[in-house]
Length: 218
Ligand code: ADP
Ligand code: ZN
Image 1: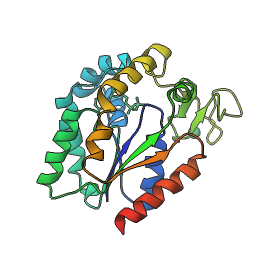
Image 2: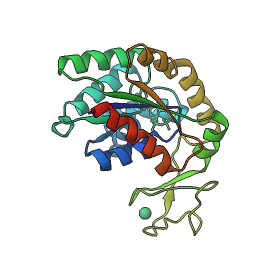
Image 3: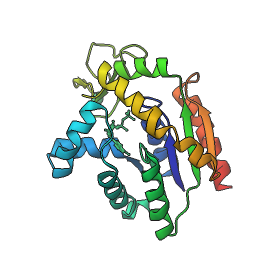
């Protein structure tokens, strides 16, 4: 089962991808998370990506496509994968199409998680993550009991360096100018579905996604 999650920054792609991963046993591939790990490790790719990411700009397509291809070719992706944050441009979508055709793989579902932009800005500004256990919090919507401390393991919480107002504004511009067009691209190819990512709880949104995925398996 090969899935793409689409949605603006902060729509909840990562959160939902994690739940799909647990329920369906296929790995989540987050290009943003891979890039952050590369930065952390100080690799050549990480160093190249840094300036783009901190500005909220896209990392060049050729770097991302090579990185995604390497990851999708991994053994753990044989039974399927969930793409979160890739593709993000038409060129990436085309490259993905070629890559999958070459591997005799198909996309089973492209799910767009829809949320209004004003809500997204608050979600991004408020989000904090525990790097130790992975738990997520939000100072506006789901504050930790003790300020900046993880409820689950007591570690200090982290704020992403690109979750500041200026970078967030640019990430939305980039989304609206380059990524939003993928909705029409995948609508024309079939398998495109939308879920409301705004009003329900994380579990309610997940159950809409689960239903779509179960239907797509048949
Ligand atoms: P969000 O979706 O919340 O903005 P991500 O974690 O998906 O954040 O991505 C963070 C940053 O990593 C992006 O702003 C961009 O610089 C880079 N990045 C991630 N995925 C891609 C991609 N597919 N193409 C280009 N740049 C990417
Ligand atoms: Zn923790």
